[in-house]
Image (cartoon, rainbow, N blue to C red; front, side, top):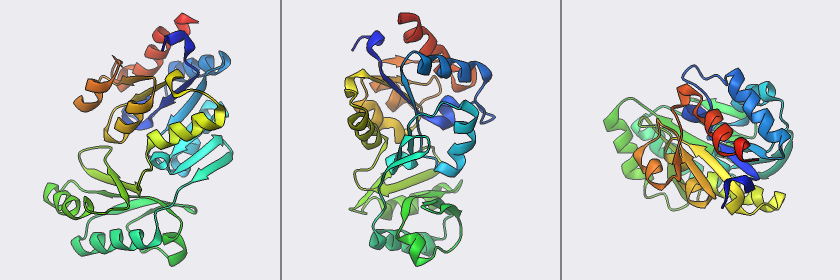
Length: 248
């Protein structure tokens, strides 16, 4: 792929698009707007749910597609729902059986929004898009992983050293990007992506031009075609400016 053929840029949020204060800087927002004006799709591709994505989407005002909940919740445009992929009810119950037994903090997303450390109704469990566990206790995380790794119908990943994230098997940011490209009729080879952590790995393997952040894990840097500056140094915006907009 040549960089002047980029048609879509998928961007992780935490540790990538957002700085350490969880902000999109004015320069970054302006750069993304210029990319859209140049005919390039700018896609937020994140483990976040829509409730916590909305304030940023409203700040950007780009009306672009969104890949939420690690690919479980895909929007063809900011307000047009596309595909939802729920964790099977039986698998949700298995996950919560382990969570409750080892007593690890949890969170996640359903059709109704976000939840954390509370019992879910049966209706919510049937519409569960993603479940995560989080703890600073290394032994507690290890105990959870030792059981979760054997969940046959679950995609297990992480977005940091203190958590694990679970989706339906086969659901990832790579799935979200692939499905979105089918809808938009854009070849995957004409896509660029940015990321920093474990839940970006699969997306890096399918995107045409993956770019790791300066603060990214080594596994991402090893498979990236380029490494951008740190997320606190507007790495995404500066890379788009240099690699894409300056080539048009």
